Image (cartoon, each protein chain N blue to C red):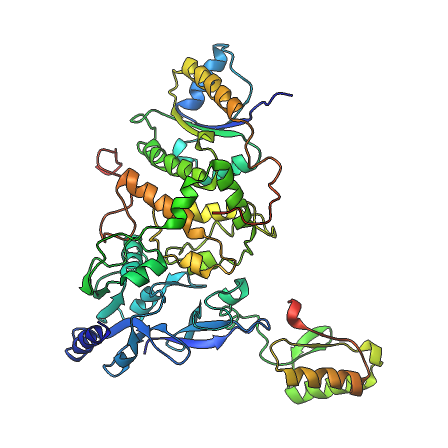
Amino acid sequence: MSFEPRIVAFLCNWCSYTGADLAGTARMRYPPNVVIIRVMCSGRVSPLLVMSALKQGADAVLICGCHIGDCHYTTGNWQTEKRIPLLRKALEMLGIDPRRVRLEWVSASEGARFVELIEEYVAEIRQLGPNPLTGAQDARTSPPSL
Amino acid sequence: MPNESVFSICPYCGAGCGLNLQVLDGRLVGVRPSRSHPVSQGRLCIKGWHANEFVTSEDRLTTPLIRKDGRLQPAPWKEALDLVAARLRAAAPDGIGALSSAKCTNEENYLMQKFVRVVLGSNNVDHCARL
Amino acid sequence: MLEQVRRHCKEALDAKRLDLVYGVGNRKAGPAPRFFSTAEELDELVLAGKEPLVFTCRPSDRNVVDLVRERSPTAKLGIVARGCDERALFELAKRFQLSLDGIEIIGVACDQAQAEECRCPRPYPKNLAFGTPLDKPVDDPVLEKLQRLPLEERLAFWRYQLSKCVKCYGCRNACPMCFCKECQMEGELFVPRGAQPPEFPTFHFVQLIHLADRCIDCGECERACPMDIPLRLLKKSLRSEVRERFGYEAGVDPTTASPLGSIERGEPSHAE
């Protein structure tokens, strides 16, 4: 059976969720590999929530918010923009491919862009393979050499 | 001196890790591991790291309690010891168990098991090392 | 150098420039941080030893300097601080955990041997009073090796290392920057109760993320770990990521606020 990625997408209420909604009402098709979780602001997405999603079986986590300058809470996505790269670095140091976490800006009118983004990301994760955090555990008990 | 670091030994298990208790105006405010202690060398387990917290706990026993009318009630030491002695005399040897402590000296633990085996006639001896 | 520091502190106490000196004192039971109020007591002041001066007292979750300041709010306090001690003071002050008012930092530089033992990237304080700062930074050979590993091997390395965890919370308790009243490492939301070893890698990830812009790289977490988990490597790499991205290093400067959780130049603000 070929690998079907599961992607959790945290979408901000004001822009990105509305953008995804636009894709829906316009009857645009995109891969069904995405589970959408609506949050009020992308700034609410704590790195710990992303880790929770990865632990619970997500192969990748997508975080979408309003474009910089458009945040409905003025400063929320500026903080997201600073935080997510650090999260990606932390994952990389742990040995998890940082491409499994992605931050994108999608506005309420960008339904078509949202579809493109999902298509592209699903293809990328399909190539990357399953999330090693959820697969069979490495049973090695001796320390890997460093 | 407003803050002192008082060396002590962790009260929890037989390993006996070294603690530096932090004392501010005679009040115990924290605990630090002792790096120079030969046993623990600056490491503690979760109990040691919080070894100071029970000292001021409201749940601590400060006096013997005897169950009267279904409720535990404070009692003087003499009454409590007399009651224990009377009950030990009355009980069947196999109905008695004794728990000693890893924090007692070897000699005390030896006396404890000797007392239980020889005087009380029971083999039910255990201690707190699996707390 | 020790004699110079002692003399400096004695003179300050005698001249009433300082009321108290905080530093490491030598005792029969080994060196430990203590407060000195007289010149005679200062004969026990030492500079050696890896004793951190700034730490959090539990269960109050307040640091020792703040507790003493509360008792004697007007006392003039001198702190014989190494680089890491000073970074802790600066970073805690920025985060409103203590006040630097009335505190004189008597900065002491560590020598090459000490710096190498601690793998310290910055073994000298900003307020340098004694000693010469090392001009060449100390490299961390272990971190460099970890960075060269391919992803899968790095994951296997951490799977093994973190599986040793006995969940003693020593890394959290020893950390001078861990002062949260409610610790997410204890919260049921991310750390299931009773799991032993704790869920990989969430338990350690919580602290790593919280300390991303706070970690002063003192190495206390690693020193406190009874299972020898190289916890500092992760924090160190995140600290250098914050430096590369934002030019911010926790504790190096007493006034610059962290880029995370503050509004930077060019960013919008609610304040008019």
